[in-house]
Length: 239
Length: 257
Image 1: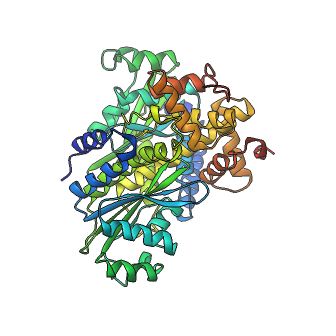
Image 2 (image 1 turned 90 degrees about the vertical axis):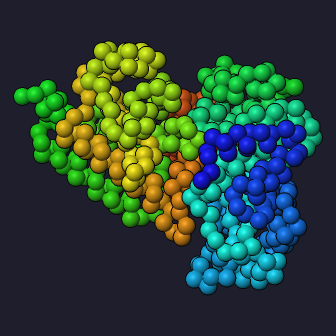
Image 3 (image 1 turned 30 degrees about the vertical axis):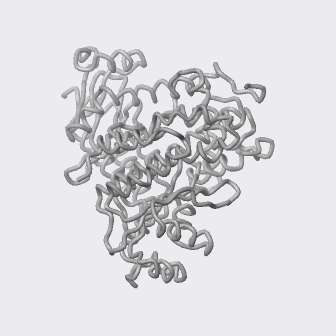
């Protein structure tokens, strides 16, 4: 049984240098969730896909494979926003698996029998997917899936930073102090408002909000409330 | 006549009116559950039903976010102060007690319960509420959230009213669990996360509309909901479209048209 608080601590401790956060989250999944490999793929606004990290060669190849083929659990989870959990790829009764004939054949060659793909998202923000595999058939139990969902939330935030801060402008704000953004309404309302104020995407708006909180050493929630209460407005002239 | 009975009588003038409203509510909910529905919209209908059928002043639904917090997923009003009162029960309050114990919690007179919830009570009183009730969202031996109701009258839900509230809470539980029946593997944690993420999309869209139209969050939500109803669209789909299309704010079609 996975202890939730302990798992949250582990995910928080995965913070550190921004660029290696996704890798550390994937490694934690392998250590704790009883999977043989994990990988994280990015999907950009424009539909561009890329492998961000993988814990082993097999994981990397099955990530690459899905991007090349354009089919597989990772593609489905990003499209539908729902987890895709296949306990046995060779189980002909599994409806989910019927759609990926080419992927399944190739994955089986790699010795992969079970695949689990979780979407990385924050509301309407879709960042990519966390993929895990087992070389033997077997479902994730409830505790493992719960823990995996928390890992996906942490990975979503880590990946957003990585994806959008390539010019370094926001990288300073990436303290990684939280494993997720939670469900505070004002944070998400403020994100929508900033989007309109600056004419940027929802992803960029979210990052700018977080960066402002970091650069002014204030809690994210407090800055968000200022935006919602219209005491703080983001302007394109801001540094 | 007991106080409880007189309250019930006040709420609906005549049992037939009330029963009619109640029957209609359950028919609407049942219709929703058999179709391809939007979970936030269903929960939204449920909290509205609490207000219209049970006669409470405000109702909200909070779910366990699987990280040890309660998150608001539906509210009968989007008024900021009300949302804050729901949300502050993350630390203390009847809804938190209800979720922790898995049993209904009520206070007939908040004034007399200041010691019980020292932070929560002054906020609730300041908002004009005098009594509060909370019933659990139960799944077998697990409690996944709470349905929280406030009244400006000094009497909490009791008797038949409380049973009805519990029935509405049970419908909410079914609604949350049923939403993804198309998926072979559905686990509670995933269903809760999906419901909460759906709410996040709505908050993002509210922000877009509030800023674009320079209106309150409450009006922004009403705009979203009206558009969804007028066009027979799911609330979540409309919200997602607002957030996605608004990447070019000049190109956002006016929603209210």
